[in-house]
Amino acid sequence: MALFDFLQDGAQERYLPSIKIIADRWDIMLGEDALDGVDDFTFTERVISLLESGEYRADVILQVISDLGSIAWWRGPHLGDGHAGRVAALARRLHLNGADALTLPPRDIPRSAARRAHVVFGGDLVGPFHSPSRGAIDYVAALAMDPEVERIDLHHGGESIPPNMQAYIDERLANVPPERGLTLISTQENPNYLIDTIRKGPCTYHFWCEPIMAPHITIASRLGPTVMFTCGDEPPPQYADVFWYFHEPQHMAPIWKRRGAPSSFSRNYVQSLSGPFYDEGPPAPRARAELGLPDDAFVIATVGNRLTVDLDEAFVTGIEKILRDRPNALWLVVGGLPDALLDACQTILGDQFRYIVQDLELARLMTTVDVFANPFRQGGGNSAMIALTAGAVLLTTNDGDVASMAPPEHRAKDIDDYFARLATLIDVPGTMDAWRGPQQERRKLMNDQTYFLMSLKAMVDTAYDRFEARQGRTLTSVVEEG
Image 1 (cartoon, one colour):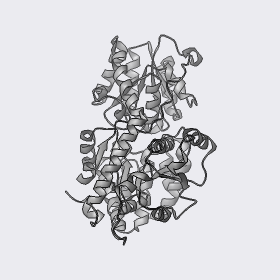
Image 2 (image 1 turned 30 degrees about the horizontal axis):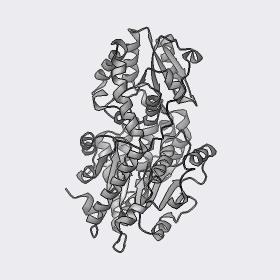
Image 3 (image 1 turned 180 degrees about the vertical axis):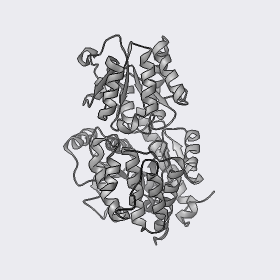
Image 4 (image 1 turned 90 degrees about the vertical axis):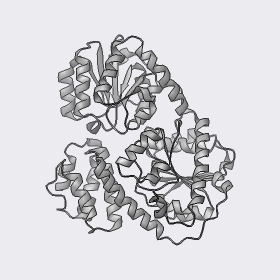
């Protein structure tokens, strides 16, 4: 209970049940007093030191590493480069040891089989407003556009799919022809999913927002070519023949090196200029009067599910300074806020602060916005794409998911540059239009599903070539190759 008492302090309420599960699990796995007395400055070091002590089984270490990532995402503190590197090295070694211990015959996979058959691991399908869930379906829909494909298995977590998620699946995949062999498989309902996959024959394995510690990711690399979406700047802890995201390789390489990824991982990274974004077109405009927003106001919006973590002091203070000198500007925040921060914003910013806990028509809400001001965070890609589609201008730093959605010249180098750019967008006539054009061109390319399919096909071919080149070698030797 002492661990949960610490973790719940500063956590967003919606994540408390999940954090409680982790705290209870760690009390059993690590010992009830293993983390007594930790604070935000000592917590991460204590956890990693315990995992490095040699006192715990491999399955315990991997579970705790996975949980630590969730805590950093839901509550904080964020893992710095040094801690991230140590955790990744631990996880990588355990996964590679397990994969290299498997006794498997050589895999004779024709290139045509790798192109025809695809097994996609897409994580839990929790709802259409959850970007990884929606993206998993859109990913499959893109694969199904290829007339050469004869098999697509989408593996997902959970025993049942929520009704609203099922409705999106029915709508999005309604026109997939039967000859694509599309099947949705629950990994909980079918614990033999990997054996069944092998029995169906050779294929390419795809990983889209799958839990990063899932052991079948590395095991699949012994079975066939693998393609993995990497989700933002963060280097993956497990091997794939192709890693991909929207950032430029020269953006990713130094970050991955700094956070402990081997050079072989950076070599396997490719940029895709498009992704599984289903473009439903611009939303119907919403009148500002419905929300009590003045027609002549300059509206800055920030949206998120984890604003307790995302809104740090530097960001909030910077917004306050921008508003103080510009009475025509206001800050619209959408998402849960802790009471203390909400009260402070309302008191200090007054009528220049507007707050909406949740809006199920977020796309239409974003039509009232001038600038989508992304906090200094790793996530936020789904809400940023919604804002761009609605016509808002995107402001972001050079880090995280959202940075990949802006042209490189629009990404702020640091905090001071971020708020200088925001001031220019507000104060200098014509700047908004000058930014909007290039951002919309980039958005259209990211949403182009024909282009995305071309990118996927190229990735599959590259993954196949790399798989063939490493046949007969241990995965460890491939990963550790300098």
